[in-house]
Image (cartoon, rainbow, N blue to C red):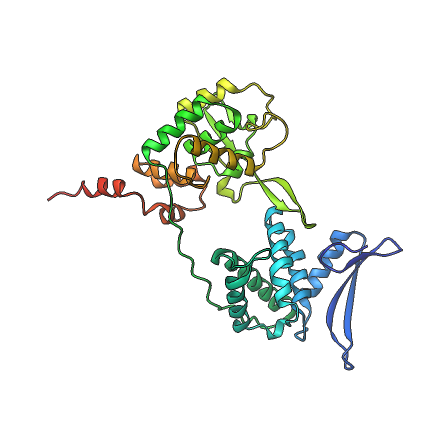
Length: 364
């Protein structure tokens, strides 16, 4: 039986055989070559190596090339990223490019694909997809074209296709009075989920990072939280979803975050579960991010605060830190950004109050 992606089968003699498309005979019939190994991993390694060395530059379908690219990419990316790539390929990209050959793929094809998805790309209702979503798809197509050039010597004719320009969305933050009101409510009603919301508000942790916290991530003596994982819902490849715990989104996201004194005291006071229990559920099971997001919206409603996204708690924390004069490098580290440039790009346009504070320092 073959493994998903590359054409690798286990033979009756218990060896593994990997086959790859290696051009066509003079009569037009497809030609395949094979490699062999005692294990799937060894055979896969040989197969990819042979594919890379193939001088063939003839016809190669987008469908076949995309499957090979995805299988080759799987070993280098996170499970959540692989699930996202698989979904976009299956639902959007492959249906559109199913009749395309790699050697004929052009910038005009990408332009038509972009316009089609922006205009009417939604799967279950009318309307177009967001620029960000379509941009992600085009990046996948460009990676597949680069793969075809590397492994099959097919010129990449879409390498210099201009990306979709995306404007940074407006950042919404809680006003000081709203933050004070929400904090008072969360502390007064200090159940595990409200505590999770409080952690995001005063540390800037992402929704998935808060959902991934276990009690052994909280170091009471040092008053810090270790961010070691993130939790999110991903496609299971069969029309459903599965809750996945994985490492944070980048190396910088795996970090140690010092806690404000009052938050350390709250966590110390409510800790009554074993070290492996989730801070949010109190059990070995991680919480659904959707459930915490819904709890947050309910808290906003009770406090009479206009609806904002859960991620805006992170923006509120960052903006407060800038207002308090935090060093940008320290703030970047707290947020788990890969560079200070990212932090500056996101939060250079802070509130009018902060801008006025800086401008008032200018004198004659």
